[in-house]
Length: 189
Ligand SMILES: C[S@@+](CC[C@H](N)C(=O)[O-])C[C@H]1O[C@@H](n2cnc3c(N)ncnc32)[C@H](O)[C@@H]1O
Image (cartoon, rainbow, N blue to C red; front, side, top):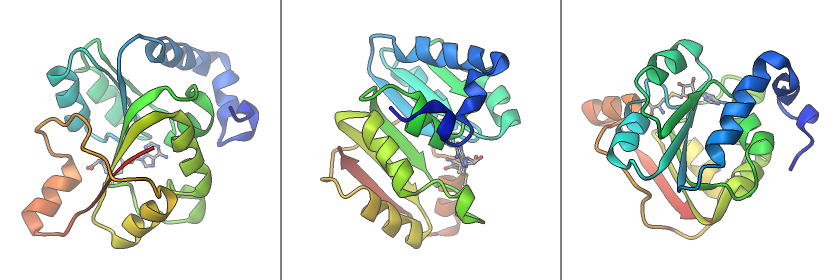
């Protein structure tokens, strides 16, 4: 595991007010059930739907926007933990090795500056580290360049889809409404 103090502000999680978040994360991840992770869940429609549909699984979601986290967390069942954590910090340094069965990365924000980019070699190494062997990455974007980048960062065999609910994410709805092409990747570590 990477040195906590060196990655994306992980020193934050050594501070008392963030230590509680870390403790909740650690307790949730140690539960003995399959664990899915959704990155950038926004309003949480997809993860909340999956959490209700698949009660025997645990569902972890991270999102940067605090108001979104608070609103969605108010509706989360016991098998769903929604936290405000940068997914890069989470995957590179906070989660244990081989702890996640499925990662859902739906419509990552096209970066406005390199330091804001989610997709990078470092992030890909983190995703590879936290996925269990045979774990699945489910990725979607309407930005072809991001799809190509994801293909090159995760050059893994194609996989059957992970557990999916019926709710579409906000961006997926927009794409469907406006006839925008969606590029998908479903690969197995
Ligand atoms: C374009 S939106 C897509 C939201 C949703 N997944 C969808 O498909 O409609 C990207 C989301 O990822 C969140 N996000 C961006 N960078 C992130 C990061 N490093 N860690 C966690 N969430 C992030 C943003 O706040 C935003 O809600």
